Length: 251
Image (cartoon, rainbow, N blue to C red; front, side, top):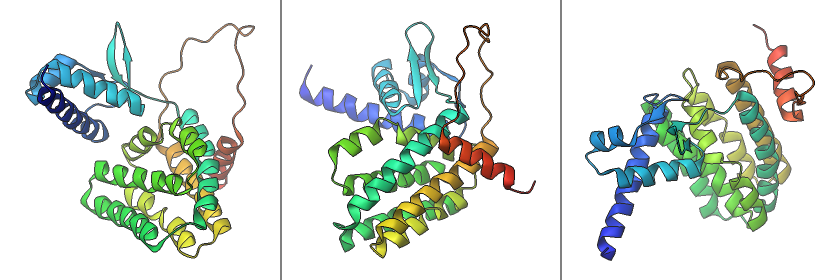
């Protein structure tokens, strides 16, 4: 295969991936929905090869799951799974902020500010995809600025991009509120205050978790095992705290 053909197919696969991601966030493919390669290829006017590559890319992001016999489906994690990841992310990103503060430049802060501006612009325009992309970029940049490869590797294993897209794609999500949650983090980083930045990130994830808990409907539970075989799971501290905060709020 000529090198140009490989590059062309790769670019096409990226375009298909972006369009599928936009369709998922817009609700055209809700959680649990099947994505049929032949149908997508027909809709986008491509062969199945770039669609297959695009689906693998979305699988790597954690947005879809691919089964050899059932094909590709939009992944639907439970609320507890998302909240547990929020708890771990809040600790990792708080550490990232503390490590990054001493090395932040004005250009770094301006870049983070552009992410916040883009989130707010996208919220006003009703563009969930653009807001999710800027949101994910903001958090990713904080972790990158920590300059700690181990931290970044562990953070990326939590599929932060897919969880951001999922959160912003929930019907009823307050996109303006989600965008505004990032401003206190940016303000603390501008002051080069590592503790305030850490606290702001923890608060950010708690508030986002409260919103998620109120809007996210879990999938139907699987068949229950016999009591002797069932394994009880205790909620993580972060999940428990989100539940407590939700219970304290007036109805």
